[in-house]
Length: 315
Image (tube, rainbow, N blue to C red; front, top):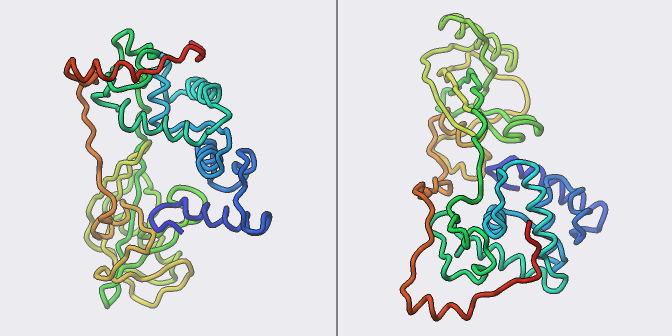
């Protein structure tokens, strides 16, 4: 199971479904694959075509970028209508023979040649068929509309330490945000409470959940941005006055190796734990996209490698 993401629960459920219904075998059909927990259109297409060489389209970010430029698609690439059109194009272009090689090649083309910034248009084997390249508008695609405003979610969290310095974490329900993962005890923050009232309210919530009184102390604020929401967490240092009751909880040694514990990044912030070293931010060049230039000799040598695709539909 994935230790860092709620998808681990879906993976486990999908494995159980395959074991019960198919003797442990993974289905090769796109429709059957999408009946498994956690498998959507992209994952189903990827498994069917890449693992079983079935003629199933797939649409990841690289493929969407290639198709958006190839056909100069004006619609917002995030919009459902545009996504449906891109899926349709991916399916119409897919050959019946060697679909695995085609999909792999299309993804590699987007990753290595038709890049988000400084695409290598002179090296692209599809440049003669690319409308964006012909119109000198490669940097205009894919189109992206204005992202939705982030919703702010206010929480109160308890950073509970026992006499040995261990940290208390609780497991989220499998459904919902960060399903199945471990976090500090947290609660939706009530509005219009004073600082003293927040401490009293938090102590009441902890008493109800764990059957013990808590001393609520110093507060600090943790902010964490997700894709469509911003978490603003008031984290209070807390210590229990008695043994705790309740299930779905555990104590963590902050000095131990916690790589096998499913802790989301914001929970690590709240608990004062270091960020998992496997997760690092990628820096993307935000400058205007332009085709990288080749010297005349190199461009001439590549001319014969260009592929003219006359049978592709133009939309």
